[in-house]
Length: 101
Length: 189
Image (cartoon, rainbow over the protein chains, first blue to last red):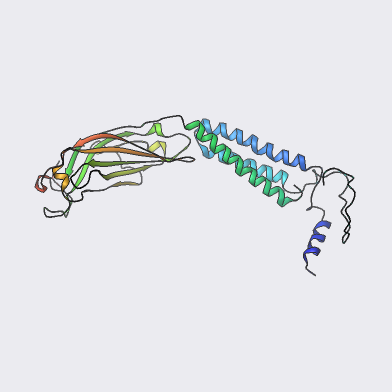
C-alpha cells in the first residue's frame, strides 16, 4: 500500500539515495570552495573585460560544477560501514557510538 | 547535508549570497568614479508644426538643433543603459517652471555612445530615438522674459545600484512672439 511510512522505508533501503555521514563536511567544503574560487576568478575577469555578465556566468559555471560533484550521492562521501538505522517501530533512543548524527 | 535535496538547497542559497556579495563589490568599484559626458548643442531653429494655426490655444513649435555627444565615459561594467533627453526649460506667468522634453534616445552599448544629430548627422541613430514637439500650456512662452534653455539630461541605469540623473544646460534660444514669425514646415532653414 502507499503510505508515507512505507515510502520512507523503501527509500531507506535504496542504496544510492539516502544520506551520507562522514563526507558531509567534505561535501560542504567542496561546494563552497568551488563556487567561491570561480566567483573570484569571474570577478577579476569581469573587471578587466568590463562586463558583469562574465562574472555572473562564471558563478553559474561554478554552481553547475559544484552541483555535479556534491549533489548526487556518489558514495565517495560515505564511510566504510553502512549506516545503522534504528529498527522500525522501535521507540528507544540508541546509544551514540559514532560521531555527529 | 544528509540528502540530495538538502544539498541542492544549500548550494542554491549559498549561490544567492555569493551573487549578492559580488554585486556589492561591483558597486564599490564604480561608486567613486564621477564620469561626465561631453555634449554640445548649437544652431537651434524653430519650425511650425504641420496642422497648427494662429488661433490655437497653445503655442507650438518644432525645435531642431545640431548636437554632438560623447557618452563613452558613462559606460563601465555596471552600466546597463544610458537614457539621454533634451528638455526645453523656460519661465512663464502661468507656470514658474516649464520643462518640455523635445528629444530622447536610449544608448545600450558603448559602440553607440558617440553620435551626432542635425546637419552633420552621418547615419540614423540605431534604435529608440524620439523627437517630440514643444507644446506650451497657453501662449506664455511667446512673451517669456528670458530665452528658452535647452538642457541636456542623462540618466545612467546600472546593472546593480541606484539610477542617477544629471543635467547640464547647453544652449538658449528666444521664442518668437507671434505665430507668423515661425517658419512654415518645408521652408528651407
